[in-house]
Image (cartoon, rainbow, N blue to C red):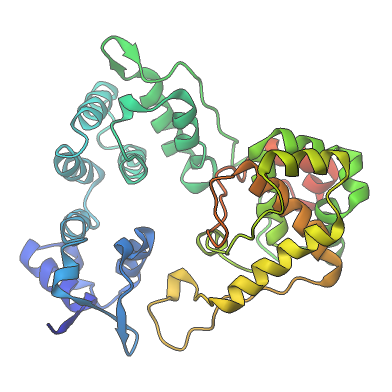
Length: 360
């Protein structure tokens, strides 16, 4: 069975659907971004001069969603909503009914935040929204603090708080999000001084003691993940999607024992260093290409360089996060479900870090 080009598939479908994409298909970034956002639907396509190639049978894995994307491409928000609700009503009928009732009642069909909130919701859930616990709903909505527009985040929060099923709201919690317009975010490289201050706050044992960081991270999975997420930025320039793919090392003890040893100061620096060295070895043993460009040829593999002086502190930070996420097996990717949020950053790293960060 011969391979077919993703771009040719999309062009043919766009013509059949009379999609607005049909006149712009030569600009392929939007299509590639759609495939990347969906992690290529679990398929690793071959490439031919940079063109992703699929077998006909592989198209069935994403044909319906590609049709939906092409149908909604550059359409007004209200049409995007109708198309999404029509398609996903066959998968999540209750969720779609509740969302339609919500936006009709709010007269929000033409608000951009309405379709953006729906797009996020349908891309993230894996069951009917009424089956989510309060904790699951928090984990569902919190990434919107940094991952989408603030207005869309509030739209989804409003949906969860006001939509009712059998007379009860979906949640009794009130979600809030950091304002993103209070201070101007830094758009240029940090100064050497600011960078040094942030590195000190993240890796120095003196800073850890000043802020009680180990105790905070041992008690809070979210703070532990935030700490590791931040620390990795000093040793690699990777997107979040690739940071999550870095191969986790094996902890020397079970998670509870690791946390107790760290609190007691009994996890040795050599044990912490070994964790980082195992991660680097696993990455070298099984090299990976950046997920966004993995379908192209001549793309360099993911690289990490961890200075000797940082291996012990990074290993300690890594150990705390992994001890909270015991479901991660050696070689699996890391979990970062709680990053961003300036209040959380300030709580963990302190005012000095926030000032160097530029309150961004």
